[in-house]
Length: 96
Image (cartoon, rainbow, N blue to C red; front, side):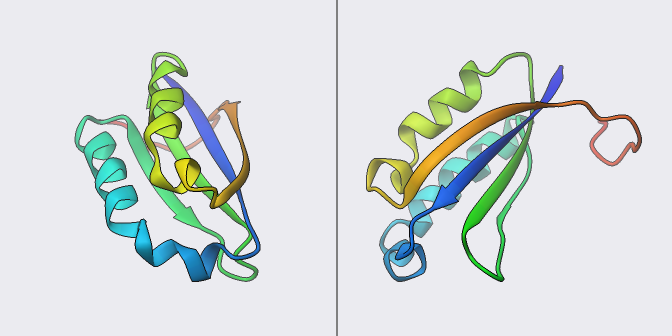
């Protein structure tokens, strides 16, 4: 398994528009967590301009499918996004 980060660059009106889609977004994330794919996720708060989701998956197809189905992306709350491989060199917090 490999680690990846999904970086969301949020729109300026993200905080105002988020409530309409938050429950669906969080359920999608929770489902990925229950499948042991999504390790951590959250948004930066000061300023609220980006979010970071840490994944442990074989390849990026799982992450791409998450993005495709994410109501934040589908409804324009994400200005752009990127998936980056992440080389973990220390720590065992994510091992199962």
